Length: 366
Ligand code: ADP
Ligand code: MG
Image (cartoon, rainbow, N blue to C red; front, side, top):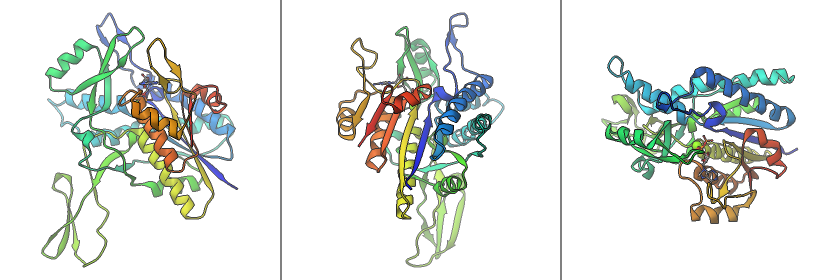
């Protein structure tokens, strides 16, 4: 029997309400932990219903961390008079812990429907190229939104910001940006595979995974030496012709969770098929907008309900989609299909079933 594996990628909105402009205070309010627990619980209830309705399928949940990782960084910066600051890779790892903890509520929602499954977050790293061009021209939005005026003053403090989007009133929202290298491989994929085989629902590549690059050894007195961050060294006697060890070290960046989820799906498929298993994969990107639009936020905005791989590639080249928001989702969908995935959907979590029926969201098929 062909097994179907679905990867659900949760966007920022699915795990935290968006902050709002508070006219009285004259600044944006950032949703607190209680608000994040509540929104995550609401999403888990919807996800549990989906998982309950597909008892024969395997499910993986992934999540973004843009607002959270930016807030952790900001908190550490504000506290720098009394405490050390935090590098972005550590902020990412911290966010996987906090957000994964909140997402274990999925297990409770499932039990309310009579399904008993363990839900487990794994701290995950993804391989990147330390020369990725995005590291010098950052595109990934993190932390809270700022008005244009606030953004200008933040820029003077040395932050890099870019226009994120316009709100319902048409006012510009700006956010801090950091480098977002393309994910090339999933380091802890064995853990995810083992979870799936044990009937566990893995929460994977949180925040896109912690970006790490491969440390190439150099030779010193007949030893292979691997030099990691903070002067940490690993060494062993060098054997001629032997494979180098797998050693990685972190980089201060944030990987796009849609691209990492797509890659995870592709790798799980390749590995299953290499073992002779019959597996089909689907990528479901759940976000705050019901699919990709043509002429987004223009008077002639149009839904894109169904795109073939060829159509998606053609319009991706035309640049219809917001950099750092919708563009990586469409790119993730394209790569997923190119990697053998049978379907990718971009929709809102509450409209998933409608999207599966073709009446909502955007569906990508080969
Ligand atoms: P997530 O946290 O789910 O990854 P993002 O903010 O990164 O969410 O991406 C979703 C956002 O993409 C939407 O809120 C919308 O403002 C923006 N967007 C940019 N271009 C488009 C488009 N062409 N169609 C739909 N949404 C778009
Ligand atoms: Mg995003």
